[in-house]
Amino acid sequence: MIQIKVNNYSVEVSGHAGYMPRGSDIVCAGVSALYQTLEESAKELTGGEYKTSSEEGYGRICPIGEVSNEYKLLVSSFLIGVNGIAASYPDYVIVHAD
Image (cartoon, rainbow, N blue to C red; front, side, top):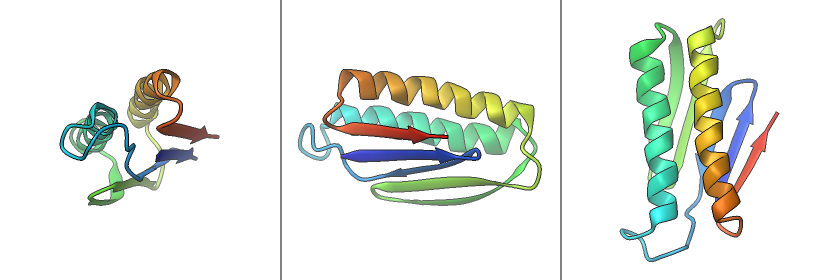
């Protein structure tokens, strides 16, 4: 199962969906694409600083300092996407957001 935690605009994604074998899992691919877009968009579009960590089955992005409105919008968009995936595949994705 993929666990997604959003707390004070820090985003952590961990686990594997297990919906299909690795390499053909559409649930993992969807969540991964959304997370990677969030991370790269934050770095390129917001001008903010972020502490990031990424490896297979795990990603985390934490803003350093003041959180910009642009980054807040990106996180809101990310949440719309992953909540949509979680609604379609509730046995494979869970979202915890404060």
